[in-house]
Length: 93
Ligand code: SF4
Ligand code: SF4
Image (cartoon, rainbow, N blue to C red; front, side, top):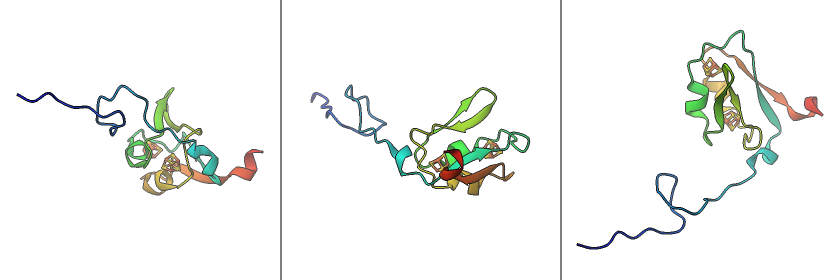
């Protein structure tokens, strides 16, 4: 029986022991997703559709990790209750 071989940098499905590539995609952003908690029904679609999987449950609601959110707007587009608005970064400075 052959021995199983592991590479140092495999995909996130692997059990590679070494940390995988981690990019600061938050610096790409020109708009950020802002949640209207009154409209949110906690369906979790935003977290499922986020291409970089940076939305997680924080407290009672789903929120983006702004260190990684690149402002693509997919979460806002897929939210069935239109509870997420994309707001220009300039409004937070
Ligand atoms: S997709 Fe919209 S309604 Fe669903 S959890 Fe996300 S913000 Fe809330
Ligand atoms: S804007 Fe894009 S990257 Fe940011 S949380 Fe929404 S889906 Fe994810």
